[in-house]
Image (cartoon, rainbow, N blue to C red; front, side, top):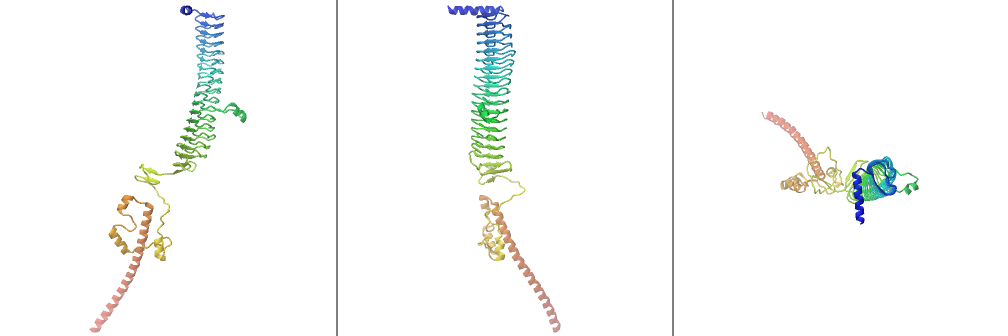
Length: 461
């Protein structure tokens, strides 16, 4: 029997609609104008608009708009705007001239007056919005205190709760940006960009800062952020940042950095305790315990001597390992497979000593620099080279091919051979000088002998 009654009622409604009639069901529901449907006591009462559908006690009461759909107690009860959809207790209750809004949930958009093109879904979502436009609030208490802010998207319970007049924000996740105020922010993840509560600033005797242009993604990323232009991606990345223009990527990256600016921290716990500025830390735990500024760390641990360390303020870079150029298996601090072009190469003399001992031994008879040194004679050098085809103390061609050349040691050995050669030359010069002197004497004797021979020849004649 009940089913037949309901069917009859709806059949009647369809017939009335088809004839452009107003359907009113409920005590004191509106009867003015045409093409309206009012269901519930006082629904549409005093309404003068057309093409409206009001369902619920006092829904659409005093309405002057057109093309609206209101469902719920007092929903749209003072509406003057057009093409709105309010669903839920008191949703859109104070709407005046705003148009094209969709409010779903108890008290959603309840104070909206002139703001249009909004979508509020959830209990008290957009509760205090008055003139803000083109906002999307999804979740209980989302955008609750927004009044004049525009083009915001808050998704999640209490997302954007405190933001009053911020614009162009996108918050996704439970409590994202709950206490944050500002514009052009992107927060994604539970408690991302949460902000300090009101008691914090009351105790400090300061006001809440406006934070703009931040991108915080991850659970509690930038949770207590008070800076601008920061990018934090990862669980608790940049959680306490108060500085500006930082890039924090990784679990708890820059977790305790509160005052630093223009840092780049990439990796798990990178820059965790840093408080400086203009740093670049790359790798898990890189620079974790570094507190200074203008530093470069490339490392996969919290070591204070990272694989690559730099200081931007003094233009210094240190490599604490082996560097290979043209090779994947360097065997020294620097291994180059290929050619090197340089204007100058400077080598510190540590280890093998310079061969001053060659001259020291020759001229002083002994050497303190190298007491065991003895310069070989030319006869010994001749015998050695004849037998080995290379100089003494110089690697053979085969040894050079197998082991390469140590330039510092080779240059010092070559210098030793040059000094020895110099001494050989000095000795030879002395011998030549002596020979020349002897030759001169011999020539003088020859002249005297010639004279004597001539005298003897005269006497004989």
